[in-house]
Length: 293
Image (cartoon, rainbow, N blue to C red; front, top):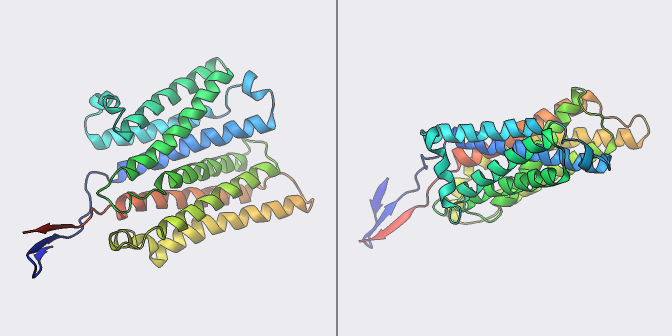
């Protein structure tokens, strides 16, 4: 509600932005999962097989491409004019959404080329494009100065950590389905990714004591959301992955148990989805405005 105080100042209270809704949240979630998955598989392939970077395409690379492409499809649907989506490339110097679109074009091209003509150059281009796309999504929100819950410098780091956490989750699900041969390294790397994402999220929730930031992110600190994101989406998979590491080091088995991988992967995906949808749809309040009359 608008109001005036005794000093003749008109106050416009914080209002929720209406330009970005679930399609934007879907774009950030799917885009982060797709790029994080590609990078996770790419790095795992390098460490597990020294000949991988020259002789084989990135395993399951097209899955990452489909996920990122689905995210952009959601974004185009929200814009309402899909045939004009090429205009997103017209503001590369000023708009992070244009940089995101360019990274997407490079990512798609490099993944397709590597699939048919496996080369280190194509893999490196795809990996760098995926990394830049992931970070660009964070800067899209960070550049929104009118939204206090978005305009915080930790936002790009959150998108980076959540992307790798999502990638780890999808890799765990593939392992549970028997599509990947895994050892101790996958569980340890996944554990690191989800732990870092949890730490970055906790830092984000306490990033500022400013009234507008605290008010905008209040919904994210409610008991239900804290339990859903921190306990179920992070602590639970961390516990599962720790049990995996104990089992591996005790010598009872080095391979990833399917049930551990399945439960951990699903929990991480749900937790990251709740994080990004909460930031976009629950915390997207514009700053209050004081106008001296």
